[in-house]
Length: 285
Image 1 (cartoon, helix red, strand yellow):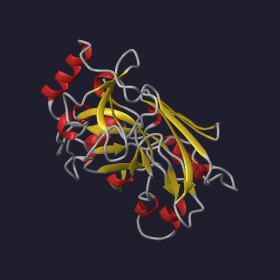
Image 2: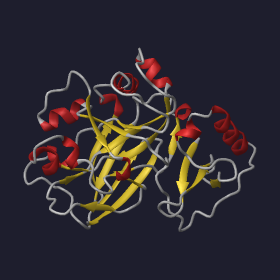
Image 3: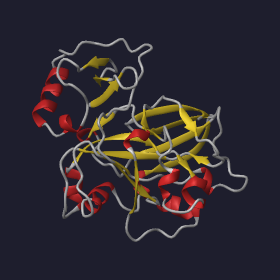
């Protein structure tokens, strides 16, 4: 299923995109698309049955904002340097264990919302990523297979980053990762049954129409199941938590000088195979 949330920011309602591309209203069946729903097999079954029976009312999509496909996100765990080609382009040694940092849930915006260039920023960068949404409580998992079994679904994430704040200003990476609007998510949450192999997905990103990133999740150093297993050794993952699994080569930081960092007025478009497409215009904060 392709689950999404539509409406004005902070007042989104749950919806579903059916096989014919028609937007369907779920508000008569569930309150929201969130961790509580993803952990409830019975509720998900009712949604699926109603969709298959053609019982869901259609929504008029024209002019309707698409928000983030997940509400009440608990935490966003991010994996850095998780693609062989991205490590090469930045001159970094491939990590022997996953690099973990966090984004706050309030960085999340819709897939077509404005992204703000922070005040004082000269190095705002793009990163297309596969986002993993947790559907079952995970603690001390023992295998990558168990990790995959705890995934509810997948989405497109844009891990916007400010490289000066991240790398040159001391401390941890978090200062360059948690600026306002720095995690567009969506347009859909695609349930795991529709993604048989998360290690066979193409990822692409364009800036002002020019292709910048053209990668595949096959390049991940630590695949999805292993990432979930690994993270569960250090923290409990709950339904509705999100894991951003890293970006392939092609970011501005990896380009020759002068590096083409993002500026107000730029337009970024990105997609992950089967998970939909995003588009954001950048503006000054």
